[in-house]
Image (cartoon, rainbow, N blue to C red; front, side):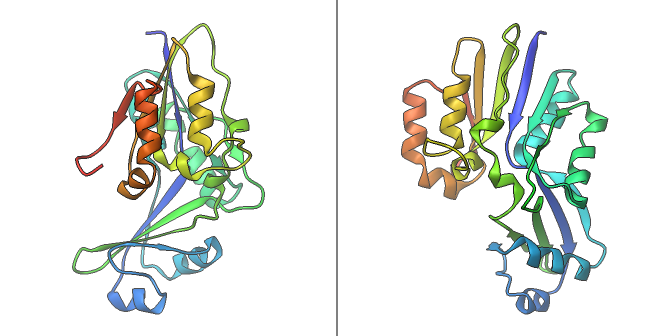
Length: 220
């Protein structure tokens, strides 16, 4: 098989911990939904968690690891900071054989997602929109080997990435750069809110046959 898969998306580290409801109240975290918070404040909360489980993740990154396990040449493209969590994220690819040449962001921390589980099994999420992952720009999209067929797997988080782009978002840059007979773009919708907000843009991509495949759940 002479196909290479390039997965492009958020470079994220999940921090999972069990807490009580009072913890959410003390730190002004909304229960059973997502709360936005500065990266610095998230880093202050992590030492207060009891035995958190820390796992590198993100839709495109997880997919890259799964595909590599099937013996397919795979790379991941995403932005991290040279901090504890960035190094953890980078090193997690090694056992899978995924190529990762990180885009280094010097002034923002590696993206984190706190997953806080209360005794009633509800999950409350905390993440920062001001972290390294969101700085990915069209300058960071790699040139691909013209002697191979390519699958480009990405996620609708790219609708939220606008750094250095002359277009509406990084997803538009990606579609333009990788359009061609030997390139197949697969888009995972991942989030109903992002999907609803960008539904017309998605319809246009479908109409223009820019996407080879869309992956979604029933609600999306």
